[in-house]
Image (cartoon, rainbow, N blue to C red):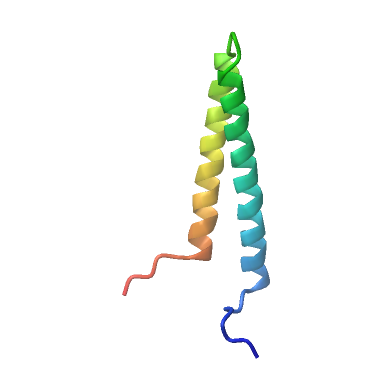
Amino acid sequence: MNDDQPFLTEEELALHAQVKLLRLEHSDLDASIEALSHMPIPDQLLIARLKRKKLSLRDEIVKIESRILPDIIA
């Protein structure tokens, strides 16, 4: 047996997969915002909406990560 890898429950595996997808979406939004900001006449309203969505994704990622690795007060 390989004891180097910790045992992960199905829920933890699902949470890891969800975080991975959210990080990918977060990265895609970052690239979109960057591209839009370099346009000759950037759409500031769209950029603001994308930034809010990006912040929302970051909050969701943090929330899920806290479920994966809860704070342990010892």
